[in-house]
Length: 254
Length: 324
Image 1 (cartoon, rainbow over the protein chains, first blue to last red):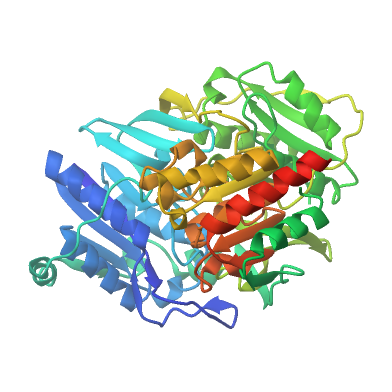
Image 2 (image 1 turned 180 degrees about the horizontal axis):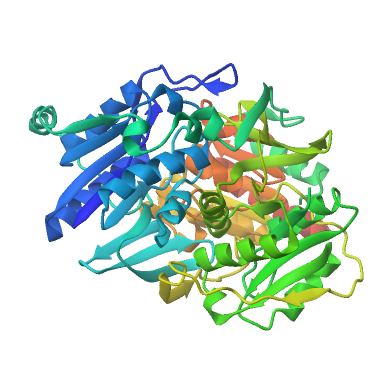
């Protein structure tokens, strides 16, 4: 089995905007949810053999996230790093990932469900559609054999068990596993593992397919959000129950 | 803009967020709003309700394959309706299913998708979406460079339009059975346990987090919920610890809710939880940690101990009930 995991390099700590774009040259790390996807890929390899390849699109610093995944145990990494890809929206990002993954021809493509920087939206369905593959999201349990997958998933309507033939795209919830730590030995080994750095041209795309020209959405303005009108915080001095009651009564909620 | 609204439902009721989006769309089109309704037939009852809430015409796909919440056949359906009817914009209320459908459609059509929108307006005839970003610290205006346009709204940001008596105008559509859309099959479905009012449609939710201190302390949340006529919710952390059933889980992994009143007991307010409840009309939070993020988006925050405050509040509420 060949498993590809798409990871995202996200800023650690607080984010800020500059010229309507997220400032990305701050210290970063692998998106937390993506570690669960890497972990699941490693478990699939441990059970069935094969290869785990991690993929990212991002600035040079995003290579650090690939090294983290390699240190956890992934076999090799592919990094699309091209200034022309900066500012890609969801649809442009899905085009780039789609082209990389088409080269890889993996049996299973994994994503982490959430991005901690909150600007990723959900990219895997778009990637799956570009690859013409079935996709399953919100997966909390995954079993695969060489031909099919069986997945437990949690949605608003309840818990489902779904099946799909492979190849397929799966996004995993962080409930699926507890990611292993990258050991010192793993970190040493990661330095020797192959990490391929590619441009858009290398994956068969032109600069107009990504970045702003390839994006179909645009940020027009950034401003201050409306505050919750009349919000307040009080400290309990023995009268908090009464304060809450009065508040609820005043708003006809009790 | 010629919008189409994706109407999600659970077989019995339309999803309230989608009904709100329907009402919003009607304000742009002089009431001429089209919608897509898909699922196991018959869907007449849902179509009638959608018509009353503003859907002037509906494309209805009754298909057993659309009974489970699988995304790709719905992408096929919407793609066909858009092409046949010349719809250039599709509006969704966020859910696990709607996000999958919208993003899949974005990939298939190469269409721009703006998500987590809290509003939409027309400026010089062009739609502009508004989104809260960076933990809601900034408001961002977003647009589309081309059509088709796709928009996902935060659940519960729009109130439903006042229902009017109207005959539903429906057109039956068949869903093309294309590859790879039929490859994912649902083999088992366990509906969320319904015990007391479901958190999905409760007007009042009392939710507990690890600040409650143990499974036995969820009785506090239950007592308060009982006297307020509400349902009990729980954070992911509390569910993981086994303190409360997973069906009650609210957050990114769990349910998204927007009740009239949300009472958060011993909940820190991590982003994971926040996205599931931030559209509640009124949020009241009690937590011992004055620095807890939840106080940043509560209407009334109380820094204090739930174990002493909640029993007193329950007594006061019961006393008040007894008087009425």
